[in-house]
Length: 112
Length: 114
Image (tube, each protein chain N blue to C red):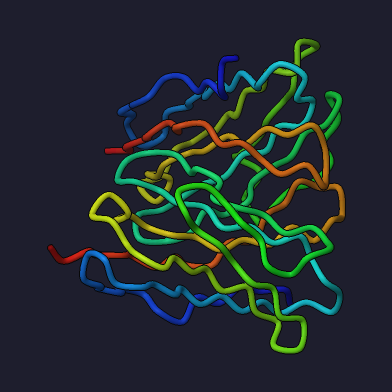
């Protein structure tokens, strides 16, 4: 069984640009959550989607948005990139609350 | 506000020695509790989780954790550490609010001496 797949693995963008990160969940997992992990810190919750609806949003600016598709895959979009957006972006999927979460290997975003 | 505290930023143990990583949480009810491990540049791997029932939980790679409600703690233990256990360890809570929001501690970096 394939795990959680994230693409791309690495990305370099310039300040002010826009970026789209992708996540494919484990088969049967309908919940997708996104996290930002800055170097030296624990992951910070950005969004959760379940059955294509936004169920939770963390304390991030409106430059961050996401969506979930009918096949339960998800995209995270970040507009007007800042240097401070440089981080490892992690996707976690689950069958639902109470089942635990499986993380992908992440996308390393560097903003220059 | 809900929070997770891992008091030890960095721990060094000798190979073969026992290990305990501390985790305390601040939340009124008993949340779902998790320990994850992260190797450099990688995603997070689930070591174990506690939802309810027996307060001593067994996980992968020989790890176990004990939930103590009176102390709001969920400490991770391993009787004999291997060099391959060197990594960063994160404690996390799920407030069961069906938002998929895990709150993580800041992590503990484990170094293993030969």
